[in-house]
Amino acid sequence: MRKRILTGITTTGTPHIGNYLGAIKPALELAGPENDSYFFLADYHALIKQTDPTEIEKSVKNVALAWLSSGLDCNQSHFYRQSDIPEVHELTWILNCSAAKGLLNRAHAYKALVAENAQSQNDDDKAINMGLFSYPVLMAADILIFSATHVPVGPDQAQHMEMARDIAGKFNHTYSNVLTIPEGIIQNDISVPGIDGRKMSKSYQNIIPFLSSEKVLQKSIAKIVTNSLEPGQPKDPKNCTLFQLYSFFASQEDVDSMHQAYKDGIGWGDAKKELYKVINDEIIPIRERYLDLNSQSDLLNDLFSDGARKVRPQAKELVAKLREAIGISKVE
Ligand code: TRP
Image 1 (cartoon, rainbow, N blue to C red):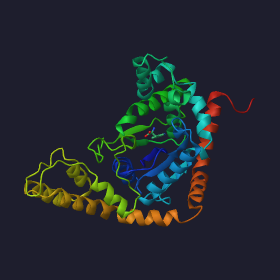
Image 2: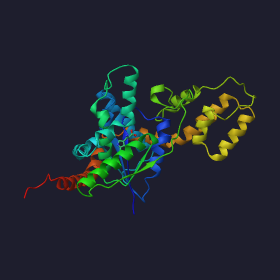
Image 3: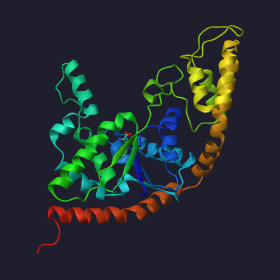
Image 4: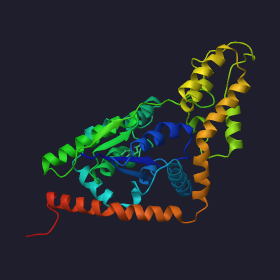
């Protein structure tokens, strides 16, 4: 049976090399012609954490361009914005009435904030909005509205996948089997180090930007922290940020020779040059597409409306079935 693959991309920030390796690349690898694939921008999810409209708009644009430049093909995959499918919110309410509050109390993002509040002796609910609390229900609606069968997500989303299955199962049991129970494809946790060696993350300000010019790329690679060993002194590739980053981009053969070069005492400057070269080689075609897409005014708006036009009829059809199942349709 054909798989229906669906995944959502929260539109916060600008994608960096860590997002590219950990989320964009593995998801696009699943989008071959043997599957139906649905990729959408989870812009209403972004609202939970971001209240600056300019930032929301900028991020939707950058995230969309990052995926499109990396090879997302709108003729082969469905690509749309969550906010263009209002049926998602109707389903969210229906699911809210099947979702146990006790289940959502256990969601880790919510629990972490409650724990933080307890530690700082604040009220349990300080700074927690209902969006954050019911986030997993909106995510379940995103998935169930298109009857997705397989959902690739990072390990941090595994719990939300279980919740989506649980909530859908409860609905089907209460009414009738309208919802498809989705399976999570939990991707490996690719831990990409940032320039200071900690996990690459916008909040640590240690990112290597992805849609940047060669100059900016070169500059951020130059900032990667190394130890003070001189050229000629043997170096240890283990736990070395530079070597780890190199391994993500280089062929096995090149990784092996770099391993040897470390033992032979390659200088940090030369190792950085090699790293720049492998990253840039991979990014050249992506950067070219990005510059091209970015120069076409209204391209994104056209793609968004095309995407929504193609998938929305399915959402409407499912909502009609759900309404019938729950007794909100024609009266006899
Ligand atoms: N919560 C996901 C994340 O932060 C994004 C997301 C929203 C999602 N809706 C989804 C992922 C539906 C998969 C399916 O990564």
